[in-house]
Image 1: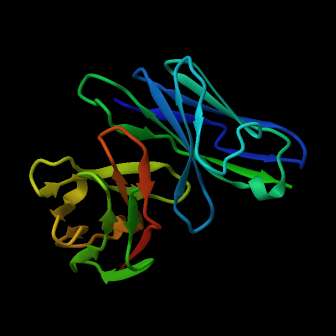
Image 2: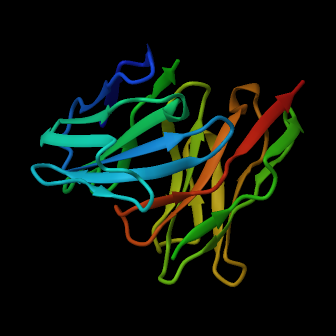
Image 3: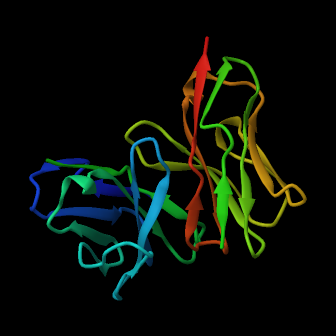
Length: 118
Length: 113
């Protein structure tokens, strides 16, 4: 149980285009989802926290108009990188948290999405 | 504010030897502490967590960690390394159980024959 998937696993796009990444909780309801980015050989940096049905809370320094987050249901959150540039190339990882039950308050991580902007 | 420091970005051990990965934390409130493992091009898997119960925490795959408040440390150990333990390990702190995680910079563990 407690599986989180991400789609796509890899994406290559041209500079200036937008890319959407999906994060799904497959067997539980995620009241909160987190989006992280990880540069090569570096740690995970939290970008934003999203609660189902409300606006995401962005970390300092993260442009909310560039990284659009939608958490429309208890099993799906999306991250859209708008007008992507090469410096946006990174590994994007989501995690999902549920309330209640045996997994109460634990974050479960997706497998990540490798974004390369040419 | 919370932070995590992992000493040693790379650790190399022989198969069968003791694994020791170091983690020190800073937190303004009693912390929740976590160790995660990441295999190449994959997400993070939880190894173990400390949530203010027993100070010695046992996790999966034979790993354990001891919370030492006086040293603000949460080092990860395993008595005998296996080749399959080769991966990146992250220590993380949270002020509250399901709240924002702050990660250390990671330690790459290499296991040699």
